[in-house]
Image (cartoon, rainbow, N blue to C red; front, side, top):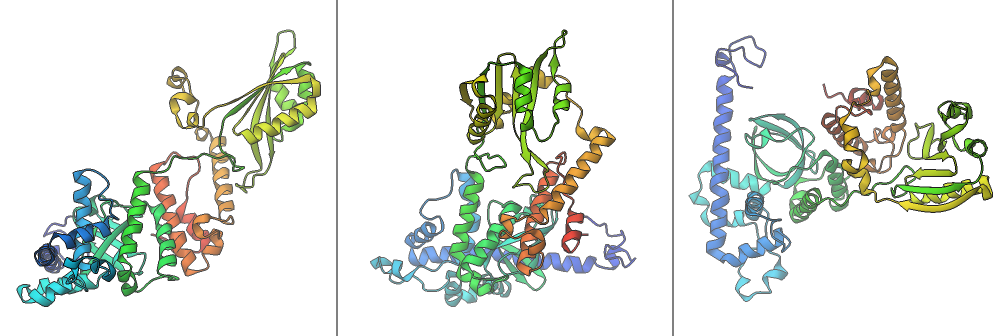
Length: 485
């Protein structure tokens, strides 16, 4: 927010901004500018010093270590983005491994400490006091993962370090314009009192869904039940880099989506066809109990009848009670059976369900149902809108949304309430297979919950028309978590 000199001071004192906090803000701005300029001097100076002292071989060794001998993903723009992370890492984290130094006769004199510290030892007198202070602070600061907890676009970013637990407000103009709360970033935060900048920012922000994966990384590699020490994180900078590259690679090149139904079966739309050798009404009476949702009378009422009162077509919604994946569901629809004169057509969404319903039909109808064929369609059809609906039909009038009537809104409200009430007591993989209520009882569980709720909030904002709506305030109240207000 831009505040005019004569505007009321945003601190709430009642005085004009120029008479209150303007001078303090100007001082912070000047210190930030000096700190940022110090980074602009120190990082290139260390890189040039390394190249002049040990030659390009040392830089190549560092690049192979950083990029795992694969180089940036592709393109000059991508390479430039990674360089902004690589150069500070080269200056403040990279130390050649002794076993690799000994491989080369020309590498015997390579440094055994951080390049920035070696530079300070040899040329420290060439640095200004601010630059020398920046070099020391950056050499101590770990490269770490942080969750974005707040953003003032064009000015600052609030960060919570996932590995160390530290909190920082970073003055940052460019990145603050694109980052959002919930994003996870890789960065080195270098502080000078209340002034902080990022020296080395990962070129790709990660989604909130990656927050719990970073917690898993912390628990595995840092063996920290909660926050880890800065020195511990610092010593694992290479593992941090490699894990970040893995997350970026998976985000840029996600694995093909594998769809499964609520039984865990792979989605494969399957159609079964039978020859019906008895009357429709007789077949219906023997199959009607396969529906657990609709009564026989209801299905007959919705059926198609001839003018002479003969049954021409009737659907049976095959289903079962409850659902092992969604505990709030009373019933699960497994498929649809359509009876017409001389024909039975069954539609299900997996081969396993197709096998089961074929057995049930043949058991109930015996010789009156002759199996003809099974057709399996690729699950890609479920993801391709052009194959899911007739374009002409899609262009026509659309049915009203269920929420367009008071009854529909009440139904959606009940559906949401049942879903989230059941979610509170269901095991969640992202929470280490604990239920949300169980997770809320421990610091680590609450940390995982916060990350998960941030992801749900992001999805809600991205798809505001979703029928299943996430009410973060209600969820936090139920779990005893602090409100974000």
